[in-house]
Length: 162
Length: 69
Image (tube, rainbow over all chains, first blue to last red; front, top):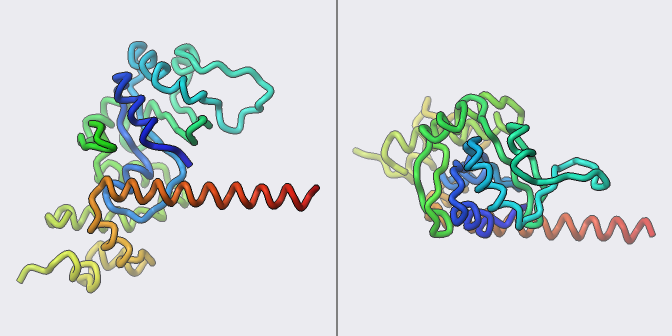
């Protein structure tokens, strides 16, 4: 699980450029799909990575499925040397993606996102259309299972119902 | 005559994406319930489900540990 409110507040307060994707975005649109983690796409510029380190460090991120006895430092060098990361933190599981399959880089993701309020904070989330593309591109069983519901939601959205 | 959201979900038009979701096994009554909530209420509801799921998993882990001892 993840405690969403403190994470989102820290990201916003530290001026991180990010777009919420995955299960949290899907829930926003009305799906009954249940996720246990918080996924977001981030801009991989040095300035934004520094903001991200400032925002996430208080939650003590450790790489998920990484031996606890091995040293791990959550810093700008670590984030600059990779694209996608899965972290265990003191507030839950958080996945950071530099790119989203089916959508593209952060610039593409941002272009396919909308601004909303979550916990009274201004945040961006991936559009329903782009979420469908991302889930289709990811292609895992758990992604494909949610597609019919997302497509139904998109149909209702296009009909002006939601 | 324009059909309401309730009608579209509870009696989907054949050939629609909503009908396909129903055929796939999506519970459209749950979807309708969620759509009646605000987006923030949906996130709050998910957060509660996450917490309950976490508690159950932790209890199960604890019970497993106790059995092994």
